[in-house]
Image (cartoon, rainbow, N blue to C red):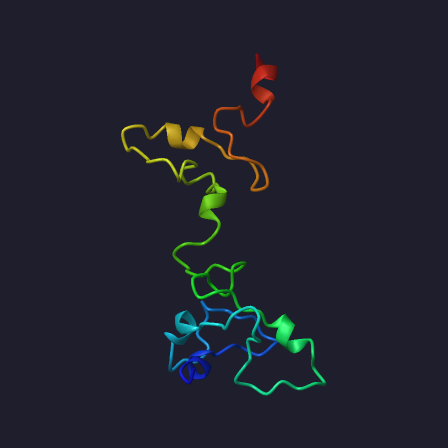
Length: 135
């Protein structure tokens, strides 16, 4: 497999395998071309493995070609992991970002007030318990 070593460009052990970030400014398309070898083979096959650093190969573990190298970090800035988590927008913006916003019903947007980011966006439930106390 002579084409595998040159295509396999894993970052050093002290740096994460960020496919989204360009490893070289001259080759911005290199990250998506980053294809690590099988799990049973070391990621840095082209680099010499030093016996003084046996923890380096297992620390650098790149995922299969069909999955991004940095699962924890957003692979594409256009699709961050926040939207699926239902992140509520600030009070001045509509709360129902996932639902289609109709310009015919503008008062419904300010009426929806999302709770803190760590709490779910319960639009049906009252955001403040001051309503029953006022009655």
